[in-house]
Image (cartoon, rainbow, N blue to C red; front, side, top):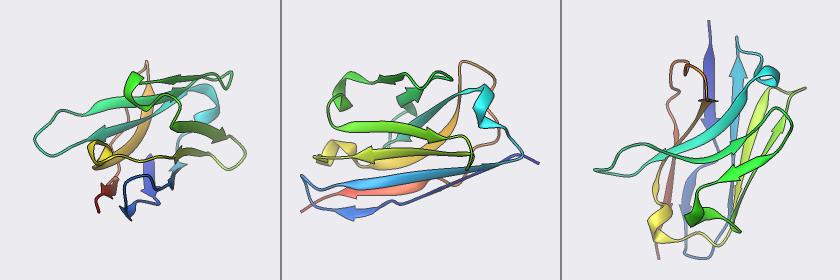
Length: 115
């Protein structure tokens, strides 16, 4: 049974930082492109960052220079380091596969950027 468990979210002031983690079970992330998605209230889910099987990152323009995606295949975990957070980054963040059929979504982790 595939399970994705996201963690690390919280309430942070503008300009602050957070590190999100996504632990996968029942899925060998090593053979997949993995990504972080987010869904803000009233908006569609969007892909924020991708990390390829060759560890190359791809970012949404609005987060370039602020977010860093990484992976630890030995731990079957994907990370998203977020710096200089802005109110518009407020959303529920999820991880999942990219460029192949997604697996069941986890519960996500809430990120709120507010003063």
